[in-house]
Amino acid sequence: MPQDTGTTDLSRVDPKIGVRYNFTPDLMLYADYSTGFKSGGVNPRPTSPATTGIPFGAEKVQAYEVGFKSEWLNHELQMRRPRSQYATAGRTQSHRQRGPAV
Image (cartoon, rainbow, N blue to C red; front, side, top):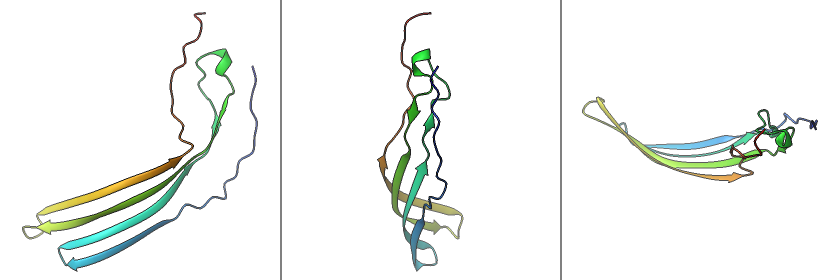
C-alpha cells in the first residue's frame, strides 16, 4: 500500500481584527474579519485499498461578520443580529467512494 510522506509548516499566523462602536450603553455595532487554516494530510480512514495514502490539501478561509447587540428590559433581554460570510479555498469534504465488493 502506498504511503505519503511530506513536510509540515507550522509558521502560519491567522489574524482576527474587530471594530466595536457603542451607540448607547445598550446598543453596540460590530464588524470582524478573520482568517483560518486547516492543514492537509493523508486519508486516515481509507474506504478501499485504492484510497489508502491519498493526500489532501490544506483549507483556507476568510470570514467576515457584521452585526449588532442590544439589551432591553433593564438587561434582562439580549438581542443579537449577526451576518456572516465565508470565502473558502481548497475545501475538503468527506465522502464514501464505492468500490468493488471484497
